[in-house]
Image 1 (cartoon, helix red, strand yellow):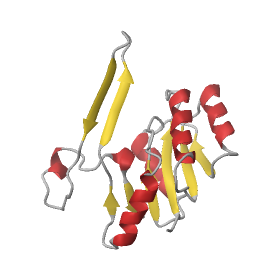
Image 2 (cartoon, one colour):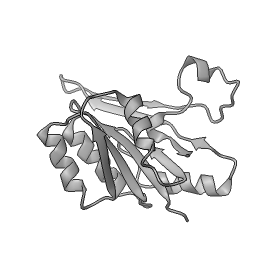
Image 3 (tube, one colour):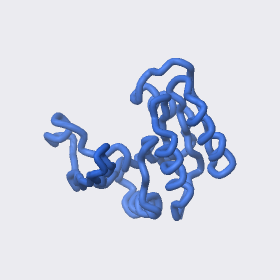
Image 4 (spheres, helix red, strand yellow):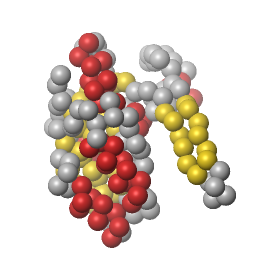
Amino acid sequence: MKTYFTVLQSVYKKDNPIFLYQSLQSIAENTVQPYSVVLVKDGILNHELESVISEWQSKLPLKVVGYEKNQGLAYALNYGLQFVETELVARMDSDDICFSDRFEKQIAQFEVDSSIEILGGGIEEFYIEENGTEFRRVRLYPKWTDSKSRTLYRGTPVAHPTLMMRT
């Protein structure tokens, strides 16, 4: 199985360092490891986030890039794409935790069907509210979407934190 893929992720000063740590940990614990993790610093970060990044530099093939002024997620991801050197790129946000076999399953689908250009899956959202109540919700997305799909105009047909695509 090919392992030539990159994880593309952005981080900015208001992100939670604990969540970033957990996100990077879920990449490190995956059954298939990325060629690189392009981590875009969307502006200057605080000390806690910089510490997390520094700790993971020796554990993951991190390629840390960025700029000084916060430009927003879309800009950061487009900026980060120029540093992707692989055919496949997987998306994650700084607060996303992926299943340990996510990359293995996605790569297998690309190998089985060479016509696939983009794929993703459902997501489980979870957090604990201030009063201690746990919130969980599973969101599923269409199995197939083509260029005439209404989901392209009403919202996102793919959960971007689960996305893997050809570059």
